[in-house]
Image (cartoon, rainbow, N blue to C red; front, side):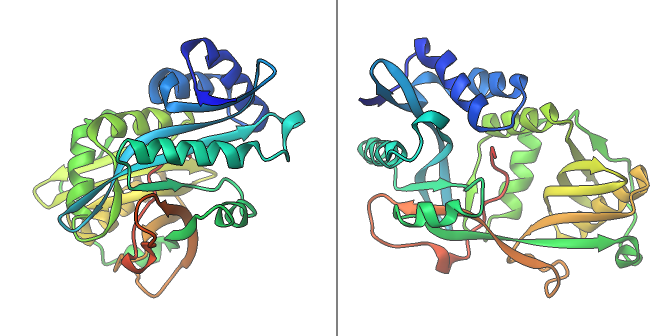
Length: 290
């Protein structure tokens, strides 16, 4: 039987998540305490046991003056002893039909492994979202301006991040998160020891979600009022942490070192009402719960 979950199912959902993913217990608790309500989970039950699950998180896809309701599917997992029986296909069909009934126009997801792109493609999803990975060395930033004030680390208002993000992406089709979800995304980062940096001064504004590892900075997303502000923030982070280099993820449309880096697939989508794909829009998806 396939159905939406109830509060009584949460422990079983946590057990499936724990058996299928490598997240620590406090992160699993975070997902079900802060991100997903029981009614946002779809489960497959066999002989009274929940054997498969996925979560449905509401979001929006914005392109120009248009906004489409979207659902982000994550945590799709089947208990190992019940895999390869088609449960996930049934769950996806159920979740998509449920979303359609609620006026949702687009389902989106981020495959956790490369082989899953083929799996989801067979189920109607298309690899519509790409990002560009770029390595930056200190010498590449020599001509970048120096910020006129210190950057702030972690103690940042989510509303400021949401505002900068929407301004920076105003001309690019993208997955939008509201202030509440940005706050949860920040908490998500902190659980894994990652950070959020903000510059806000007379020169402009910019932020970065980043991780430090072996004197290298890995930036998941950095956007600003201007491209120069993003580079200035990156330079300030390198200086503050004495980093040897930066690996950052950028929208494919970004003009920052436009001809460098590697374009890689990031996410997939499936239209739920109109049989069309959005790849031609060159859309952006990156700051996700993944």
